[in-house]
Amino acid sequence: MQPVPASVVSASTRTRSRTALVASADRSFRQRLSHTLSGLRWQVCEAEGGAQAWAHAEAAPPEAIIVDSWLPDLDLAEFVRDFRGCFPQVDMIAADGSSAAECPRGPYRQELLYALRCSQDADTAAWNTAPALGGEPDPLPARAACSSQQAVPAKLDASPASSAAMSIPMHPPARVTEPACGEWLPGERLPDERLPELIGNAACMLEVSRRVRLVAPRTTPVLIEGPTGSGKELVAEALHRLSPRSRKPLIAINCAAIPEALLEAELFGHTRGAFTGAVQGRIGRIEAADGGTLFLDEIGEMPLALQAKLLRFVECGELQRVGDNETVKVDVRIIAATHRPLAQHATAGSFRSDLYYRLAVFLIRTPSLAEHAHDLPLLVDHFMRKMGREEPLKSVDRGALAKLAAHGWPGNVRELEHVLERAVILAGDAPVVTSREIDFGLTVN
Image (tube, rainbow, N blue to C red):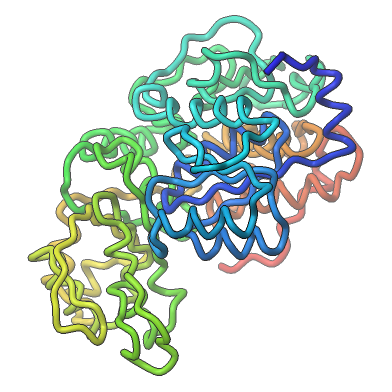
């Protein structure tokens, strides 16, 4: 395909929107691919499995679909055949870069293959490399793996003045440089042990990164403890990304978000007719994570009766679907997370102590934002740039930063992101967020 001038691409995308559907159980793969495609001005829709991808395609047929080599809910070969029959105009590409049988070559195939190659290259080696400072980076860069390839068109143009407008106390005004793998304060070197997704140079944040790097290559169960909104899911994703299982899916389930009556079937799967409404058999989240990682979020909310069944799986690696007499051997690495003091609950009897000791082989604690308050300017810059990928990049003045620094942050980093998003909306077309737009709303103490 001949290179298309950037001006032509910009003009064409204003009149015609290109949409891509990414079907994969691996959340980190979906996010990497979506990030690269978004930089190429694609609208991306993500699907965790075949059924969800099919529903998205029926609602709005995409220009192309990229399907991972394994789907948790449908047979891949059958899905490809049936999808091809119902949506013959959609360019279908497998995660390995090959196209589906008898699939017509779409006009943007090379662009899609480039994005796929970038997302696959942006794996452990690329993410672990901290680039040296130097040069004038693109204000909205692609990830490290993409920087060595052809340039990805920037979604927005940011002038040097707007990039330098971020006012950070304790440092003179300067342009904030943002490497492909993370952010740091101007003139500072990114600590070698810090992970790119864990923003902050405080000792407690560096300790989290150190522990993640130490345990990630192993199969050791990990328990992540920390207050709500402190980034426990980011830690779980980093553990999976740096592990030998990173090519396999990371399957997450929130134990507090699913009713007790359905949680067992969601975890272990069920056979047809196992209970009312079970019109067909279905594998559970544990089995879907075979070869990869299972993330049990809010494990402290799991009912005691179900904890006993989970304990058996943790001990022997075998599970039994609801309504089935046969056992299934599954190889998964378990990561659990909780905002509760699980050791105290185990002592009190509200959580099984034997399950606790098997999950808490290696402990990682995510600190509250108050414990690394000096990282607030870094976090503000990170979230402002993140929002700047979708709309014009705004800066934050010193008065707004001072108001943010004086807040207690009971909701931690998640609350900070929401406050900044609210401030950007309140600022309207203004290029700078001031203290007037910083609205904390109703906080829960």
